[in-house]
Length: 176
Image (cartoon, rainbow, N blue to C red; front, side, top):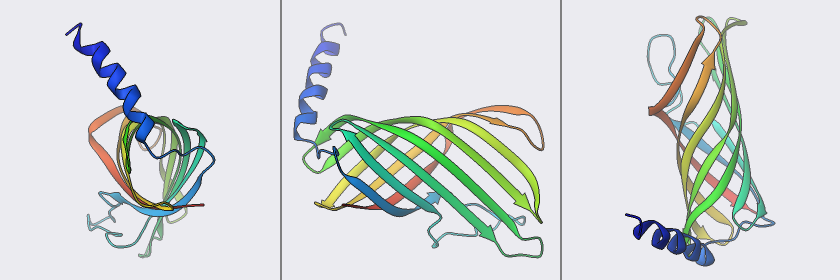
């Protein structure tokens, strides 16, 4: 094992030479959060409707900042809504020609309301892995399972660590 680790480290650093370079690129896209939010009866409310706005700003060849916004509104008798603001840092772990694998970490804030009353709010430190495949020079598809540490205020105080029941973000990103 002691001999394999340095070899894997050298290979992972060498493999980023062939990755798509994000430095100076700005991406904007839309996406879906899987599983989608559910209404009070347990039905999925946005299976086909995009609920995620994804942006990505390349600040170095191996580092990018990814602010994302999620907004879902449920039109029922009580007018429910969910808003999530998330800021992630993407570190290029492995890359090969048109496919990059990122390690992600950052912060997130979520609030949900029903009938104008906040039913819960949550602050978290999400972590995850992102797989981004470039279809062309200016368009990519990204798939990212996100879990992490979350503190929920209402209706009960709880600290939650989730990796197994993490959300899966699917985004289509256009780069300029």
